[in-house]
Length: 563
Image (cartoon, rainbow, N blue to C red; front, side, top):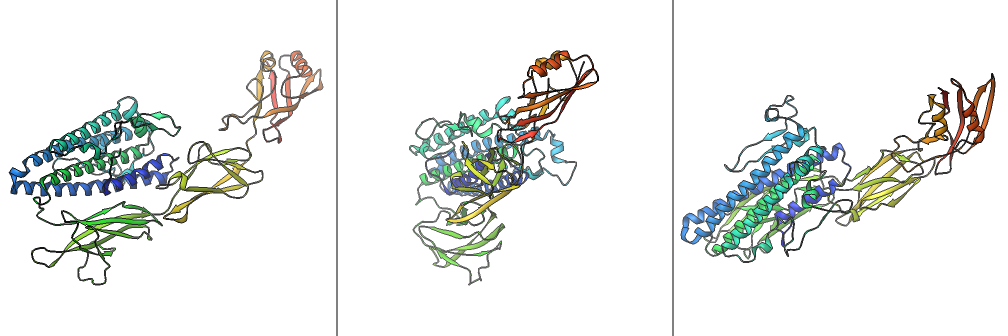
């Protein structure tokens, strides 16, 4: 869901969604499932931050209304309606998250709040922080069903159709926002609102496709066969987009009052990072600005790393001057893990002429470059076969990832983006697959994985579905020959053919032998079988089979007794 012009907040949410969609294409491991939980926690914190900014905006709006009710009545009434409508849809999504959790984990509310294992607390908080909006904060790392997609798909798509219900709720909310702002005098506001599901801003249908490049619905694209932790992260993303839509609508209503008439009673420094989750090797970027400040007025920013509160006496702190009412921060994300910084925005008071400091603080997480290299059939490679793998990296497009293999193997592209085939030469014991890419113009190894290599397993020689035991003569004859059975081998199109075998049997105390070329019984072999009596044993040995690679193998003997 996107709009015509993204705010910095929407860009931040969009970046997190790119991480989410990239992860969906993977064969996820336990580490990646935990990474979903980290992304979800970051989204929850971002949503909470936006909620605080919304409360400040409503407080400022109400302050202006109390000062000049006759001028702001129309806009304040619309703002209250927007807040009520946003409360409703946010609470709906929060309760949907809770419902999904209870159903997927198969637990009750009592189990949720009073877990048997105190080390496995699932819910951190479920308070109503604003007096209107619910905010559930789940500890997804302790969820046992992180990779479960059956229950969420049943709820969202197959039986309860919650995805369609959610889509209609989003569509109704978007229409309400557009109508509310346009009724306050803003023309064509719909061209600036995201939350798009079925049609784009021009009214054209939006097409969605699955990994097989088949056209699917909005519901299927977002919720069909999607694992539980990914759905939770996605629902939190929707909450963030709704909050941003609310914030933008309130800002537009404020502008309608008039920039010269609308004054906030308190200036406050704002920090808007493009993302609080940064891959090591890339840059952390943030915009710092003064709320309700004239963009033509310059100000200075000073900051320090690793602190919660800036010391205004620190004269050695870096000082940056604003341009167009904004200071753009940019510094290398060299150290991995949780990072924090604080500073002040120094603004000249228009009345006193004195420089007044307005404090700010922010945090972000630096993550190492990572890539998921996953086999799509087996956890090992087989000699002589096209072994399929998928490769993806959070925040890196498929076309920007370079994949290579070690000596003894060759690589070819698969049909879908991010898929490949690896062929291994005979005698190779191990193959390393490496993924690399460019981060801010610098080549970086994103990850590698070492695969063990094995020969293709030999088939089991069978007659009438068995390799030993008692078999009716008619069943042996009906079988017509020896079949090389590959069992449940994942590569079903890999087959052997029988080259030759011998049949040994005892007739009148003498050992008789027949030689057979190919897998089908020849005339001599068939005659021995036809003349066999009850209880007579037939031993098929020295069974030679040839695989697609041209190599010949000796298979197991088939020892049957005529019943």
